[in-house]
Structures are given as structure tokens and as C-alpha cells.
Image (tube, rainbow, N blue to C red):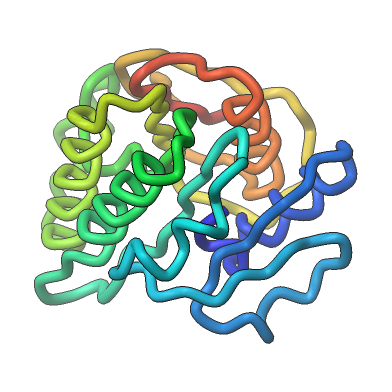
Length: 202
């Protein structure tokens, strides 16, 4: 798993371990991963050679890479995703789950979201959203068994296991989702891919 030290990553790590999965957390700073029963590998996300051995033998890879700087040009997600794909090919791992966001597309949205909310959000996060789209292109051409997951605004609510999904477009009216439920869905995707691009929201 990449991004295991973030909010959703910590929850996914705990849920996966509780379900009996062996979790490998690939991080820049191992001290930030405090969960028990987790194998921690220190690596540079921009250098596939530093983590290829760590993911070899894994059934699936989940990427929760952060967005990088909110303002200004960023390539963190796209370059990191490209590194992950390269390492997976070298390690012989086929199943990939990558998290981006529902904010960078209006497919499936209602008029208010499409013409009022998203234009404002897109202006504020223009560079970050552009990098998400580049990352999705990397996944699309990876040749792997990949699922891109697009959640909306994330909250610190509980894990309910009850949410809506939509393949190929956003969940209409789905403006929020708890990190715990995103982790729940990602665990399901890691067990069995559900589509090339899937949105998840309440």
C-alpha cells in the first residue's frame, strides 16, 4: 500500500489487517506507520527500484498518494503512479487500485454540481486535478488489472458499509463519504476489481 500513513491509509491498513490480510506499507517515513501486524518498507516513490522487492508476491497494490501542493504545478500523483506501474510490472503483480477524486470530472453530476460547484472547485484545484487526470491516463494504459476509485469530499465519519457506486461516472448527488467507508470500498476493490473507473459516495 502507498499512502498508508495518511487518514484513509491508516484506516485501510487497520481494516485489512483485521480482515486477516498481510499488509505491506511502502512509505517515505516508516515512523509514521504505527499499526501492528504491518510490514513497513522505506522507499522513494519516484524510484521504482527502491520498492519493487517490497511488493513482489503481493496480491494487489493500493495507491493513496496525496495530491501534492494545493497551488502550483504538481506531478506527484502522475509520476508516483508511473513508478508504481513500473515496479508492479517488474515484480509480476497484476492488480492495482488507485484513488483520485470525483472533483476533476462532471460525468454523471446534476446541474448544480456540474455548472456551479465544480467550476469553482476546478479553478481552485486546477493543477492538482490536472495531475489526477494524468495519473488516470497512466493507469488506463498500464495493461494491469486496474481500478481507479473516485471519491467525493471525505469526512471523519464512521464505517457504515453502506454507500453507492457508479462505474464510469460520478454518483449523482454524492457529495461526501467517510474515510472509513472509502477504506471499506478499497478493501473490496483489492479483493476483486469492480471496473476501470468507479465512483463511490453516499
